[in-house]
Image (cartoon, rainbow, N blue to C red; front, side, top):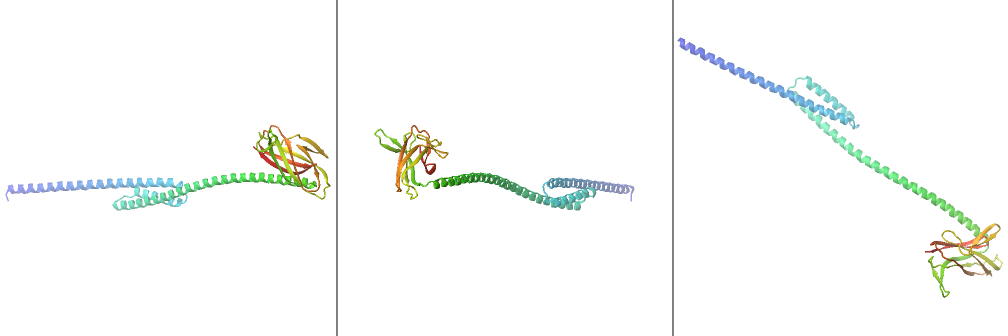
Length: 305
């Protein structure tokens, strides 16, 4: 082999070695860059998973303040997250571990959403329950007021009833004391016309006569002869109308509007008489009472407008 051929062979070998060195250098650089990207990717993924886990952990802490029903589940999940975060930070993470951590993260997110739905349901139930309680309280207040009103009304009715009973008892006593009985007591108002004719009216402004009529009933226990009746007319204010004379019966004074003397023959006797009134002003219920001596025989009322 010539010297020239040797030199060519050596150059070829050197070129081949140089190419190999370049190829190996490029391959090493590629592997290095790929490794750096892998490490950077894994680190970023670790940080993101840790960040997501910390957010879930903070959310669970907020849920624990208003979720007594699932308190134990929340505490257990917070412990799981704490252990998982510590494990991710300590261990060297590869793709397999990263996949495992992501599955765990998805599971925790799913459980957290379930807890939120339960809490939302409890909140809605609490709102409805609060509204129902408020409505019940309002109804209770209304019923209490209504009950108190009924109680007061019943007390007034009871007092009024007792008063009526007492008055009826007293009236019954008064009626039973007198041997004379009367019936069909009624009173009415009249206007006297210029021709002397009496015209029935129910107007206060037109009234100038008040008429009373009643029937004296027979009684075999009563002696025949003159009997005296005292008629008492009163206006709506209780003022006695007419002459307003007074008569005393053993210390009991009767103020009357007119005295009527009738002959009693122990047979039914119809009695009617008038009193003169001037300038009646009060509209309302007027009353007529008929007495025999000090005993009230009967009462009746009539209305003038």
